[in-house]
Image (tube, rainbow, N blue to C red; front, side):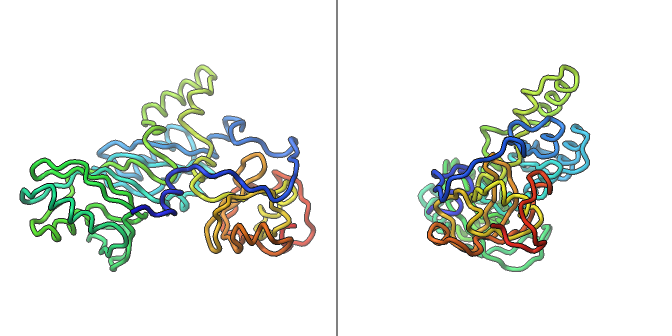
Length: 339
């Protein structure tokens, strides 16, 4: 079973944009996310960190801040101390976008230990019943209120069964407790089970191919400081826009940007192009024509409605990312809609 929202949130890739109108961008304002000065890049970046076993997610985030000498950083969703794998960390101003990653789909590779030896056929049959929406009660030690809630398991693939050990790959909605999933599978099998080892292999648009270690981050930062070479540091710290690649995009005119930075809603005339799959009430990211993230917004029209309209509110701003005055002010009323 595959969930369209999940596959989009993990792929970090989009279909070709639909163009609503032609427009030009002024090179005097803003810049490509890949051409920001390094000092600015450090405060508007994201690190796809491969967390080691042992420290908490908060400790790892604190180490990142200490290595880079910055005041703010935020991780994309806690991993237990013994769990390894991807822990994307947003830096500086990019921490405004952490919530979008925390709510994105996740993928794990898990070793589950059964409390008895069962046939592979039986294990696979029962595990297949745990795809789709399931009910979960968070464990006693958890960061959320203990109440029954529904979480979606997008896929659960049993890779190998060796005696009591089961190796499986799980794609799931944010907030799914894999430890509790193993416990519930054990109950359904009738023999009991527990999670032996867990690795997070994907989160939102990030996968293992682009992950880096704390040592790589420190080495790259020291090399930049001592040798003034930016290449390695830019490899391990990516523009924050890459951490938003799982969201549908709306590209706007230069004249619309500053009003959005002041919290205005986005009206149809400000739109240059957009993704073809936007739906009403969907969370989207608004970008400049140079690829800079401007704000996170809620769509008030779907793609077809936007393409067919000449006016009206297309999206309401939730969270502003870009600073004001990066682009020139082209509006007059403080509460004006973007035009």
